[in-house]
Length: 219
Ligand code: PRP
Ligand code: URA
Image (cartoon, rainbow, N blue to C red; front, side, top):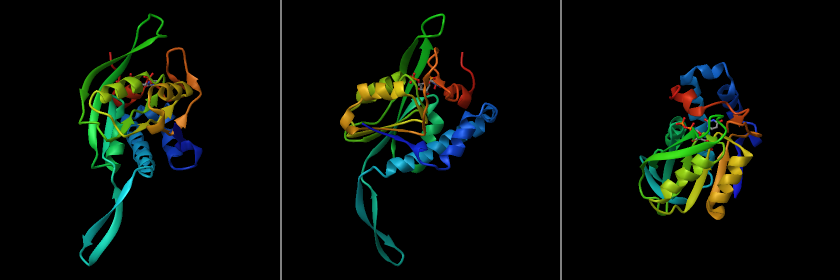
């Protein structure tokens, strides 16, 4: 399974990541969401280089131009809630894509907040058959939400290719995706791989709770 970390090469994504991680900067939710969206746009551009293309003749006012356009039928599969601004970045680039939504949220099952369970409650999706499924969720922490989101999408068909797209991944999350996704047709994309998780299953250093930073506290 190919793992592509966009931070392996210098780019403007480094600036966005610095702002996303900055405890002062991230107090402005509008800027935070906007930076998540911008990482999504640039990640989507990189994903576009891995698609299949077909030539198409376009009538311009002065003649015929032959251009290469993607032939893949893309579905953007988004995991609520923190996936929403990231989704918008991908949709800005893949504006012809279908859209699938699933809700997954983590809840602690013990008083010490060391064990998390993940709940899936909502699914709205087109058929996945023969589609290129691009699952977008900014945090790949334990990988549990990604797995359950993917399994929910699979109830609506079998995609031909899968791109797992996040902002920050951990080695644990990557290992979990490797165990639960088809190796021969999955690529993992991220803008950083952080060292690991703390005892509450938050990514360290990470940037905190993505959903809360985008939309505020939840009870
Ligand atoms: C965040 C994030 C991922 C999940 C990752 O969602 O958006 O979906 O955590 O963690 P995991 O890899 O350990 O499953 P969260 O559960 O906080 O829900 P929210 O987006 O509604 O805040
Ligand atoms: N979900 C988040 O929002 N942040 C983390 O660090 C881990 C899971």
